[in-house]
Image (cartoon, rainbow, N blue to C red):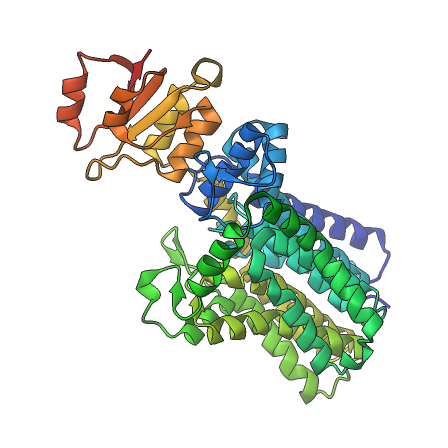
Length: 505
C-alpha cells in the first residue's frame, strides 16, 4: 500500500497544488530566460556550429567546422541532429540551441518521478521534484541550460538506470539498458561505457550475474551495438578511420592520466576532486550576501539519516529495495571510482550523481517511513529538509530570473545583422587581444545564426584580399589606430558597444 494513500479531497487538492507549483518551477528553471545568456565558447558553440553546418551542407553524417570535417569535436552526431531539428522548429537562435538540453532534463526528472510514484505513492513525486528544483548544478555549465550533449546524455543514462531497476522483476527491461546505452554513446561516445559498467557491478553485487545466459548476452549486445555499428560503418565509409582515431586520442589518451577541465585544480587529488562532486562542491555560490549549502549535501544528510535508522531499528528491506539501493550506489560510485582511477577531473563527467542521489534518497526515506517507526521524528526531519530545499529552489529561480546577456561582442553581432540582408557574406574579425584574428566559436555561431555569414579567419589582411561581399568586425579596445586608418577607406556598417564593423561591397 502506497504511503499517504488517503483519497480525501483536501489531501488530493494539496498534492495537486504542490506538484503543480514544483512542475512550474522546474519548467521555469529549465526554459526561463533560456536565450538570455551568451553562447559559451568551445563545447556549446562547437555543437551549435556543427549542427548549423549540417543544415547548410545538407550532410547529416560528417559534421564540419568552418566547412572542414571537425576532428576536434569528435562526438557522434545525435546531439547535432537534435540541435538541427530545434533550429528547424524555432529558428536560428540560442533558445533553439539549448531547447533539447532543457527538455532532456525535464524528461529525465519526469521519468524518475513517475518511477518513484509507482513504487512509493504520489507523495514521492513532490519530494523528487523538490530535490531537482533545488540543485543549482543542473542549471549551470554543461547541463540543462547549455546547448551541448551532456543533458541529453544524462537523459539516456537515467533511462538506462531506470531500466536496470525495473529489470529486477523482469529481465527484459535490461535490454532497455542496451538501447539507451547506444543512444548515450551517440551523444558522448566512450563516456557511455559507464552504463554497462554500472549494470555489470550491480548484477555482481546483487547476485544476478548468473541470469546472463548466452542468449541474453547476445540480445544485450544486439540492443547495445546495432545503432552504434550502423553509424560507425556509415561514417567509416565516408572518410575512413580519421574521426575515430582522433576521438580516441582526444577523449581517451589525451585525458586519462591527468586530464582536468580547470588547471587550478591540477594539484588537487583526483579522488578528492571527484568525491567533492558528490557533495556538490565547489558549487557553493554567494547570492544576496548569503552562503547557501549545496542541495546534494542536504540530500546526503537525509540519505545517511535514513540509512542509519534502517539497521538501528532493524527494518527489513524487501528484495526489490535491496536491489534498488545497490543499483543506486553503483550509479553514484562507479563513475567516481573509475574516473578517479583514470586520473580524470571533469566534473560534468560525473553529473550522473545528480540524477542518482534523489532516487537513492527517495528509496531510503520512504522505506523507513513505510515501516511506521519514528514517524514524528521523520516528519520533523522532512520539514527541515523541505525548508532548506525550498530556499535553495528560490535562489535558483532568482538566479534565472535575473540573468542578463553579458557578452558585448555577441550582442553587437546580433543587433547589427539581418539574415535576409547579410546572408552569404564573408565575415572577418579582429579582437582586442594581440590582434587575434581567428573567430572564437561563440562569436562565429552568433554570426551564423543571426546573419548566415561565412566566417573566415585572417582578419584585416584576408578582408582586404577578399573580392566577395564582406564584413570586418573590429573590437575598439587596442584597435583605435587601425579603426581610424580604415575610417576613410571603408563604409561604416554599424557602430555601438565596444565594437565596430566595416562593410565592403
